[in-house]
Length: 262
Image (cartoon, rainbow, N blue to C red; front, side, top):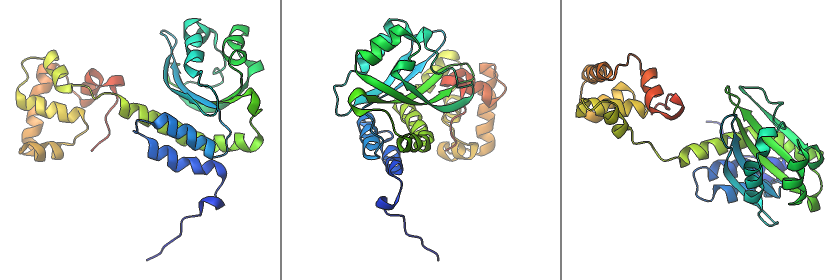
């Protein structure tokens, strides 16, 4: 048997100290506070942060925000961004192509418009923003932003490099946390609403398929043979007018994504 000692925290780059904290905070009710504290302890010098989405055809949505060591005006900033329509003229994420992610840096002087700079950066003493941004294939933007305030000065080279290293885990952790926070859909009710003729066993099988179960797992859970479970699936699909599992996912899951297998 081989064994390797884990490196001591003091021997690791400062930014890496935030990695376990971000992972451990996923799903916690105080996720936003814990992540901001972790970023501070990782010597990134963050004063505030925000997580939001921007679409082409609807109002942007703020998911998380907070401040450390300064008055928390993050929600006021986002309200101005949304209510004044600043998001419609926000070109600061244009460098990120659909289907890709990137780290972006923006100084207050580089804000996409005078109104944007005045309402958010100058009014609230925000000096600089670092973002890890993912753009969907439909053009929607998902942004995790950290901010420096005027008294903190600009991000240094080491802090920029550290954030770039941390960014993929930070993005994934935030997205996973938000997914866990969403209430589970009432799949059985949705199936019955779509087709009242579905039997209880057909509902049992379809509900478990939507939750990512395999046929072996469904059969064991319901005390059926795998062949019988598949027969119930086939009958349910005929009633629903479906042919493939992908059609079931598209009809009943947010975004139409296949659930993780469990």
